[in-house]
Length: 275
Image (tube, rainbow, N blue to C red; front, side, top):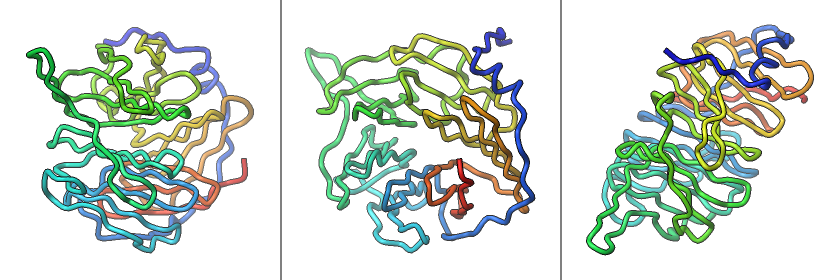
């Protein structure tokens, strides 16, 4: 059983009331996805990882398909069970390529740049099984390793800076977000959002019962449930967007243009409220 050690930030969340809106109908802007797993949105495009077809999709904001990258394989531009994507500021796109034990890096034109993968040195073999990935505002890369239960931290040139064990309180790493000097991890198994320092030190947690996906910004956190979206700001009053239909979300990304909610089979869009 987890020991309750909620931060003041978490207690503020629990104590704060939220404004509730009338039910909204999400617009489906892309469909027929095959086991989609992750979404990342830049100022110009939407990127979606599609596990079923081992590929990365690039869309515009209306949901029109711009480009398809990948297909099953182990070469450059090929994937085997891609899990997560982080398109940072749109200049580089990082995709965790689980079965190929690497992270592939592309530029904004979808040209292959390099891969982050294990190497053999001094008789020691290092291999990764990357799942969730996040890129900091400084361009440093963090990803969780499913096999070793480590989080690996790389600099802008993909040199390993640090690695630390994922704390035992965390049962599953379902989303990894780096913001404002800390790491946030959504753990759907224990229905918790964990807070870590950038060196892996455990800072605490706050409850996330029935939360399917999160998107964290410096100003606050978006939490997606099957029938609503809740925004909890660090200061001020939060609000709830009720949904007319149930959406089994796997990921979410919020931009000024809207709230993009991804399911395994489709992409939905809601207008983003003024904040």
